[in-house]
Image (cartoon, rainbow, N blue to C red; front, top):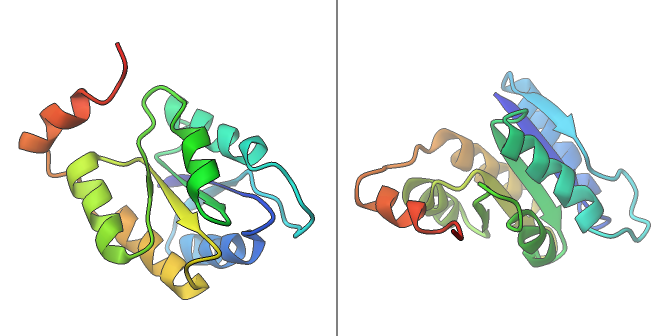
Length: 143
């Protein structure tokens, strides 16, 4: 799979570990994140991830900021993006199974690097259940 990833200054170490994990598991990574802890603006790194997923350049996206909220709000402004803020593997499973999330948002200041890697692994391995959830997901987009 092709995975786009973006992060602000709260996430360089998280991104590094996640990219290593993804590449070791045969995924291609499109890196839109910063590699520095110098203060930057999360929208500058979230929008490119959303565009990659929106246009099909990437199958899924991963975004990381301190709380996970700001970058999550940013990517969810894009058509066809269903980004889920996840803080446990169980939330990541439900985001995929019930909401067909295509981007996972990680709160770097509230999860460990290992938790983040585990959530990404779980997120990518979990399929959308469809069925009763498909109708609900179809109602998410504004008309």
